[in-house]
Figure 1 (cartoon, rainbow, N blue to C red):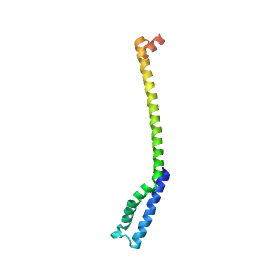
Figure 2 (cartoon, rainbow, N blue to C red):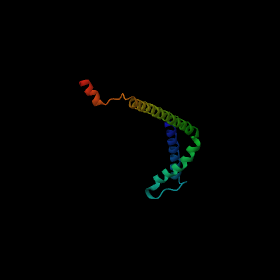
Figure 3 (cartoon, rainbow, N blue to C red):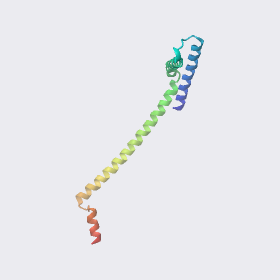
Figure 4 (cartoon, rainbow, N blue to C red):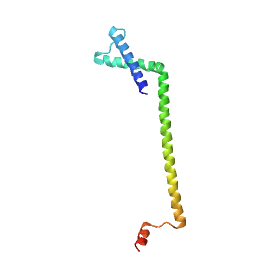
Length: 117
């Protein structure tokens, strides 16, 4: 993922240098007043986006596979945690239901008085 980002920044930097050179040479118009840098930045972004889309297709696909793998692992971990929590909850409910039906459940105050007496 970091490699793709750095490659994308490289394509942008290359586009910026080319556009800056073309503006400096007078091939492309300069921005008005102090907006020349903004003009060059915007034009470089417009040019670098489709270039990155075409030139970095393979790297982008590999990066997306990494992201999908991370998401799948996170989903599996969350499902395992949820299943473990459900099993613990079901066991606690079953124990509580069994104690109610057998009548063996004693309250904390009854247990203390029986031990004291």
